[in-house]
Amino acid sequence: MLRQFLPVSTLLLGSAFLLFAGGINGLILPLRGQYEGFSALSLGLLGTGWAIGYVSGCIFTARLVGRVGHIRAFGAMAAIAAISILLSALLVTPIAWIILRALCGFCFAGAAMIVESWLSEQTEPSSRGKVFGVYTMVNLGATTAGQMLLTVGDPNGFTFFAIAAIFYCLALVPTAVSSSATPAPLVSVNLDLKALWRNSPVAVIAVLFVGVSNSAFGTLAAVYAERVGLVLATIALFTSIPILAGALAQIPVGWLSDKTDRRHVLIGLAVLALAADAAFLVFAPDSRALNLVLAGVLGGSIFAMYPVIVAHANDHAAPGTSIQISGGLLLLYGVGGIVGPLIAGWAMAGFADRALFVITAGSHVVIIFYTMFRIMKREAVPAEDKIDFRPVPGGRISTPQTAAFAKADSVSGNA
Image (cartoon, rainbow, N blue to C red; front, side):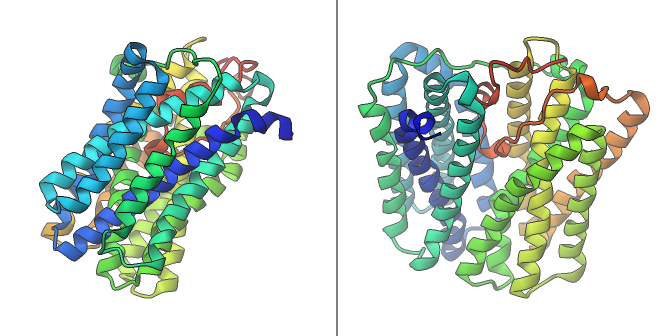
């Protein structure tokens, strides 16, 4: 077991540094923006900027790497991400932050794709599933640690911006000193809506609205938590617990979706998410315990939807197209991620803080009713024709390269 992970330990460490910095970056901006008096709409546009940059990074990184190589491209990505977070501390205006957040999203996607390509290249097919599982856990743990670090200091100073920049730079080290051969070319995908729709209409609609819901909540949860009076330590938990709950939920959700129609599982998750949305709206919780419980329920449902959608789409995919399908769905998720924070920020600015959950609830209602409609129109995939469910990170930290890394060579990916 140890021999499987020693060759990739430095790359896993580099990924941990990258995600640790990303965890700080993603939470410090809404908290500091609140202190600076930014509107909810401006803070929502941070999420829109991130999604635009991230989708662009997923599309264009393969071309950049093809021109300058993996190491140079990764070095540029990590350095620019560090510069962007430092400039965010110096240029404290909404417009500057939105632009810099988009730039950081582009670099973050590119850096993640390169690390995943390197890990895939250095991992034997027989152990790739184990390495991918460890990689996912490392990323989730590092993101959570980065967010929780903010509880030990004042987010209104320069310190956490500098720490994030340091860890972005530290992520450079593993690839810079690696003696391994240059990895194979990165996965390159385009958003082909016609092909995705022919493959699975449910996957197209569901992943779009999951992108809206998850990105709105992921961007503005800290803003909501601060405005209802939660203290900094609780705000960090409020943003971290949903991610961890979503990761843990993938185990029973994956088992269940392999045993039954994945669309039924998707509806169940959306109903559970809708119940949590309704609880936030009806009860208007202000206590620490109730907010954290509801955040955990919401996170456990919304962050487990994405891998179910990907698995359902791949059940219908033609042989040899599973990576293209998964990559295309990721880009469509990113489109939802562009829209979600924008409309949620507008709703929170114009109405009330709880309007965030009106937007997420609306998304979940669409998923429920459209999936029910499609169940009446199309038979379920026979159990023997299903692919095996594979836990994957949420769309906000997945790339097209993630699908290639997660796909073991011994599994066809289709039936």
